[in-house]
Image (cartoon, rainbow, N blue to C red; front, side, top):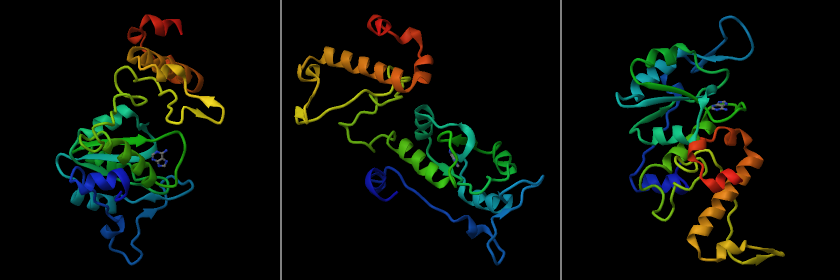
Length: 228
Ligand code: ADE
């Protein structure tokens, strides 16, 4: 978090990060944070007491509690944008089989609690998922990206790109290993370039993300889109 985009954003004072060790809220010799699951089964479950003490100290009234878990609701660009509007996010990274669910129940009346998944696969813990979320959220905070970098053309950006992934991009040289850059990008014709980019986004979405295309709102399609 001190490198690259996030590092620069925190140097500029646009964001600040705190990292806490859950074991600081344990009192036994082994600094125990997990125990066997009630009802049996494999793995270990994170104990509610250290989490309760930690969250009592770290949460503020305006905070949102975000709990990464493969059983959460999907973390999308829209969720990232919603979280970027908040002023304090607290991420509770679980390990093992997850956190005793009474912890989430306990805080739900006090702060907004979100259990979120970054994808349909299981990581060894929530930390890497939280890094992914922090990066996606932070670049939507005003001032974090340079002015020249617009987030409105991103894949999944709200508006026209909401259910499209971005098409291919090119830079110099114009010819590389026998492949030329598409002529339209050299035309200087902004209207035609925008049309081409949208068509390519459609083609790529159809080829790689038919699930997204199926969710497309027909009201947002123009005549040319319909022909594709
Ligand atoms: N923890 C383990 N797997 C995860 C996932 N896919 N998303 C969020 N948190 C997780």
